[in-house]
Amino acid sequence: MPLAGERDTLVLGGRLAKLVRPRDVIGLRGALGAGKTTLARGFIQALSPTTHDVPSPTFTLVQTYDDAKIPVFHVDLYRLTSSADLDELGLEDARAQGVVVIEWPERLGPGQFSDRLDIVIETIGVERRAVLTPSASWAERLRGFA
Ligand SMILES: Nc1ncnc2c1ncn2[C@@H]1O[C@H](COP(=O)(O)OP(=O)(O)OP(=O)(O)O)[C@@H](O)[C@H]1O
Ligand SMILES: [Mg+2]
Image (cartoon, rainbow, N blue to C red; front, side, top):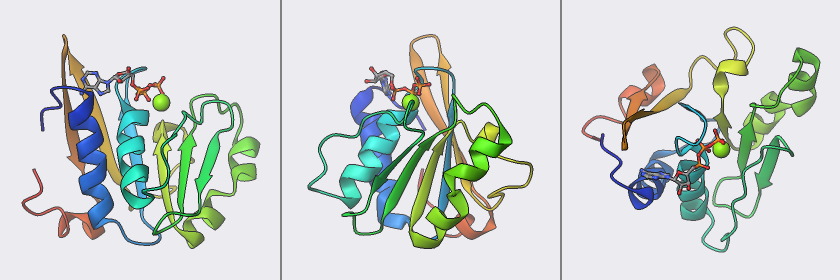
């Protein structure tokens, strides 16, 4: 679906927040600066109306929002350097507690969270669009979504 501007990216995040369930994992893919954090921001702000600031977790790797309707763990694996660091993040535990949103899910271990919803933000010139690739558990929920 087209993302004409930042606002559209935030709105898409907010719409996904309405469908999300505990233990869901969402992967956000796309080039540097595509709008992954922006989408996560719309998602988190919809689940946690008191949260205004959603910084990029580039350096912290995980940012937790536990005052949200469902706790959200916002993850950015761009700077991940080893699989030991990945283990240390404790993403399986995070998932047991809420929802995990992961920028750069390509850096997950093989087969890890394979039942997730992946969203790719494509940039074609100045135009952007989101392509949703749902796992089986998401396909039903996303019927008619676009
Ligand atoms: N649909 C859109 N159209 C135009 N600009 C957008 C759109 N969505 C987000 N942006 C802008 O793109 C810029 C980069 O966004 P953002 O930080 O969310 O990207 P990112 O994919 O998380 O980057 P990184 O790879 O560094 O994590 C921001 O200035 C944001 O406002
Ligand atoms: Mg980002």
